[in-house]
Image (cartoon, rainbow, N blue to C red; front, side, top):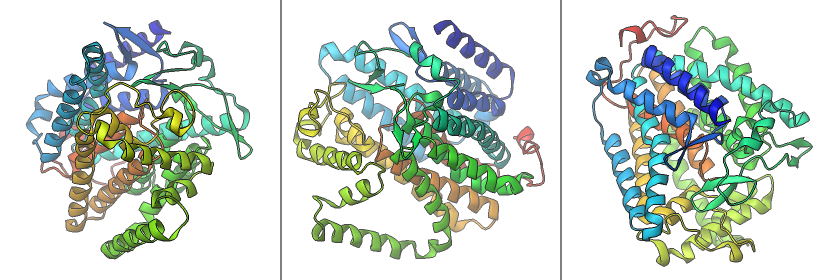
Length: 457
């Protein structure tokens, strides 16, 4: 399969070099959503997915485009992205000598999925037309994946099922690939829940497959209204919700609920401060007046299909707080924290909460760097939303606020791997673009292709 993966990457790279960048990012998006990330190629000791080859070519293509460079203006969010990379690399460089090279390789690969994807989106999606067209293509691909996911959830039959035997191995056993210093199970068979099988799609893991739908629902719902396809908005979004639900996983379910709640909350945004205070008071009440150890146990366990998995994540947060003095400065790097025996009785630690993962791998400063990016972006989007007058602008800002809210919810249920880091970064890049001064808002909803304005961008 390495030859096929390399061939697909080569074709995609060639397309990116031949077509304008606004089409190149669509090639990257389709690859992320349709081609298995676990099919990788070993290059100089590093494992590289097709998506990593493609995004590297895409960013180079953007940097060679004088028009894109001229229209780009550096922002504070871009600075935070670079600072976060520096913090992560510095933390891993503090590891022992035998883990130093492995840490640098790991973080270099991670930057392809995150920083390269972010800046590609920042540079390319620089006006309404490109953004709307991007969302339309994403919706078409997600609908196709939703039908495949629903069929897999009913029958276990999937066109990707035969590819699992070619997945990359990390030497940790027959069922996964290396993620930090633990094994992420990929293609572990179809577990049955609620009368359905947990669909894995092209990603080899139900949670990742389902979360990819939840992340993009708000953008599709809001921006489809501004195209000639707006009458298809409800059935398209309905199909995407079915695709997310086909994973029969708690994290995608909660992500979908967060997306729907975020979209509905726009009607009550004027009471945002009051509702935030109410949320804080609710947390205080749950902390002191329930039988649970801490308030987050209630949220995580009640929103889980299997309450035991939610309770485990609560225990993981407790363990992270308990052991904070051991790792707060530079984290454990690629080493396993060693909490497995006290959490689940196994010899490895399943770090299934993203914020905990960032803290234990990079130290507390790594976590703060990520949170600074998220909340800076949310604040910028909220400020632009309150200032904007045109409906399409307000829809863009609110859709991104809802999508970033979904990422925070998904973070409670899984540490992003596979395609999720790239999807996160694309959403962050779009958010950084629409809040920057260089964003071109000249777009006519009547333009069926959504590219008339893009052709002059």
